[in-house]
Image (cartoon, rainbow, N blue to C red; front, side):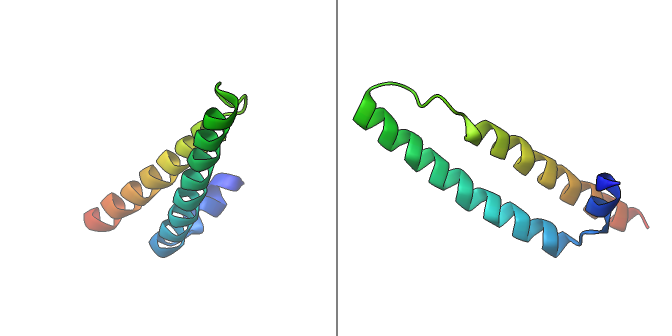
Amino acid sequence: MASRKLEELSEEDLSFIEKILGQEFSRQNERISSWKAKNHYEHPTHETKKIARIMDAIRSEKSYKRNISIKW
């Protein structure tokens, strides 16, 4: 079901999601840097890895849509 909903998103929608994820990724990196400077060790949670995986999936879906539209 969820994959069908993702398929219905336009390239513009996917770009918007990618933009929001990029902003959150930057925010998380800033938090981690601040945490390291203050506490002198790595922050225990790694939200950036999750965000990076999701961003990669969004980019792949955008690429797939572009390739499909070119073929047809």
